[in-house]
Image (cartoon, rainbow, N blue to C red; front, side, top):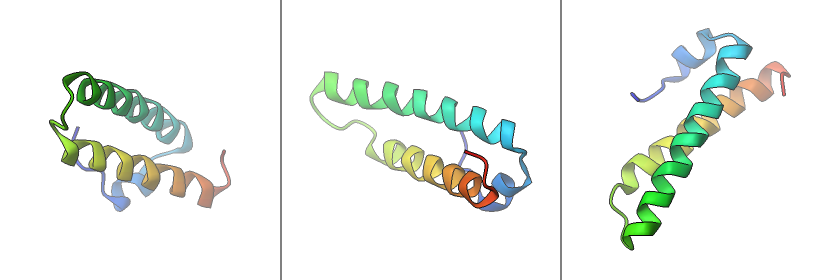
Length: 67
């Protein structure tokens, strides 16, 4: 998954944004569980990137008024 830029996010429709949020949250859960199972943070940069991308998507959804 590449980094999502705000311009790309704003070009998406609400349905696509919601689907993308769901996908990224699932991926974040997977990364967190992998990190916790191993006992050390393997890919903290990826976890931070996912969290920020989810926040961007949710921000745009909230701006549009679509929950």
